[in-house]
Length: 336
Image (cartoon, rainbow, N blue to C red; front, side, top):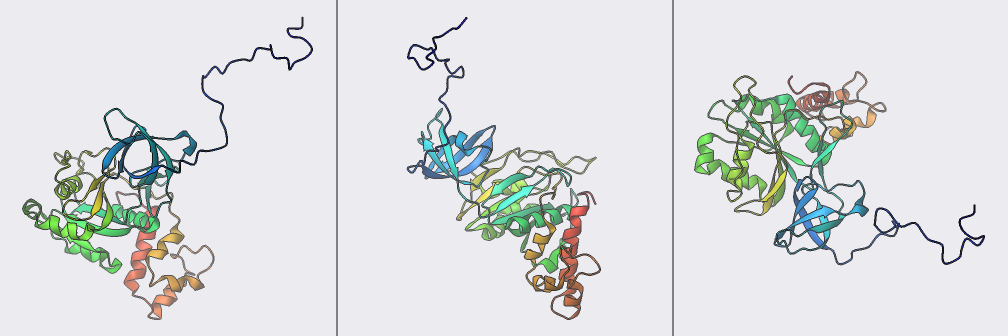
């Protein structure tokens, strides 16, 4: 039996309502020309805390951004309630192009890369000289990630009252990386904090390091009004500290211009996302020597032109050794 008449365009035909109760999608995206500019300070379960002028605003990502996610350090455009009052929610509608990206994977076999911080100028690699013992392979991996992401590295060596820094500094001396050595007494007196602050002034600096090295303690000293729970102790069996920072957080640097980004303590730093050919860009004295390299040269094989380049006196052999050590770190585990 025919339900309707033969004219299917008649006005009295009932239409099925949208069961989801939302409006039909459209490919036309709003321009939001009046959106306010802000910076993402932290991300927690889909809610983003942003700084808009002098106000801290809670926001969520707009649906039109699709799968594109905002991370700490991102410059974003927001609409909605920007008052910053309790229980209000704004919406992020645009994410600006990033100037740098610190990324890592869970391990070298993990295809999923995680963006830790965006738009940072510098990566401060914090490591203790003892308790726990330094892990040079992890430091190497952090340096590779910094060079690959466009960040300038900084070594911060803590607990110099327990062990001298000479051996570790010698290992990285040929990389010309700026460094700061601190002791517990200098941290308590504020002397070490001032030396670190000088390196951070005018920059956005992400701090990274494995648990127990004193990273969050140092951040607390640099940003005293934003106290964060520090590591209570280092596990006597594993030699590693317990995680106390669970999400990245950007904090304004006290006593200077700039931002400090405290990141969760890492036990590994996967580099599955890093193309080895990009690491050479961090060695401008060696890069011209790669012109004679075979295609897709790993810079650590018999036909690599860098060997002759260095042998002819164009660069220090120690620099080539450092490059190859960093490249080799992609093939080693963090515990090596």
